[in-house]
Structure formats: structure tokens, C-alpha cells
Image 1 (cartoon, rainbow, N blue to C red):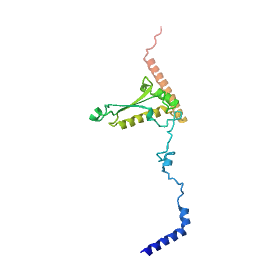
Image 2 (image 1 turned 30 degrees about the vertical axis):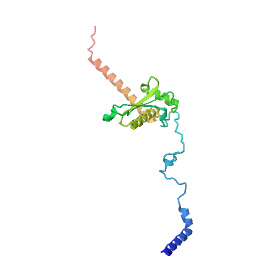
Image 3 (image 1 turned 90 degrees about the horizontal axis):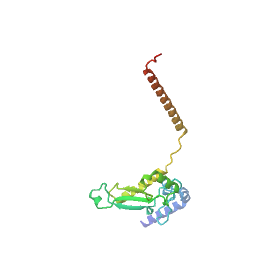
Image 4 (image 1 turned 180 degrees about the vertical axis):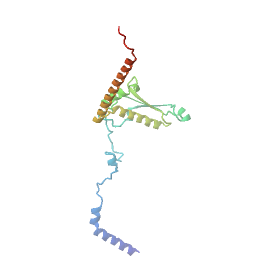
Length: 203
């Protein structure tokens, strides 16, 4: 039994020596990355938790989506939403606010657009207020409030693309057709009024 195993090992060794070059040539390159690898899906990311990473910064009106929660004022209170008796015992309602003018994580362009679009949601002291009591969970309501804030900033920063030449031409034709229709209706009403008048008497 031992001699058989030794013979098999020697045969395998001779095969590897003989075909070593072929195996090395057909082996995949060490730098190969799959199309669904972490680096290709999320460039610049990694699994090293000890490595410090810089949060993305917004540029101009382009919001990065990053919201530093430590720079927000978060308060909790009793909710009036779903949850039965739970709403009378746990502070699940979330009030999230921040001072728009002094928010360092927003650019000046974004601050101006937020102040203009959501002036009714900004308090007298200049804070934007977002509330959430959607669920019976405090953490889920906090996540919902952050999602609302992120959506509000994206909406305020949205700039519609300029209309295409085809859209401008369609708008011009519609305007001309509306003008023609208005003049035709005006002429028809004038003819109706003239037909209602009696014949003019001659003195």
C-alpha cells in the first residue's frame, strides 16, 4: 500500500515537472478582476475597516448624497402614528433639523436653492425641519427622515435639461394653432352679434 502511494506521488511529480510550463502559461493573470468585483461596482471602496476614508464632497449644485448625522439636531418624541400602545411608551417620532446657512457639508449654491424651494419648511431661526413617524421603530423613522432630507436636497438641486429643437418647434406650432383658433372664435362671435342686429332704419 505504501509502495503504491509512493509510486503515485512520483508519477504526479514527473507530470508536474513535464507540464509545468503549460500549466503556468494557461493560469489566469494575477491582476484579473471580475466584472462584478467590488472595485468595479464601487470604485475606491474596499473591505479594510481600519482604513480611514474621506466622505464624498458636494460640488456646486451636485449633491454627493452624504449627510453627516453628527451635524444634525435629532430629537425624539411620542408618535401618533401606528403602533398601538407602543406609541404611548416609546419615543419613536423623529424630528430632524439643521441650520441651512451654516451647514458646512453643503455648498453655497445648494444652500441658496434649499432656502428658496423649502422656505415654508424653514423655521424662524433658519433651520430646515423634517419629521417622520412612519413606523413604530425609532431607527427606521430616523432612516426615513434622512431619506426625506436627501430627496429634498436632490429635488432642490435638480436643473431641467434645455428643451430640444423638436420640442421648441412643437411648442411654436401649438402656440400658432391656439392663436388661429382664438381669432376664428372671435370672428365667429362677431358675425353672430351682427346677425342679431336689426336692419338699420333710414331717415
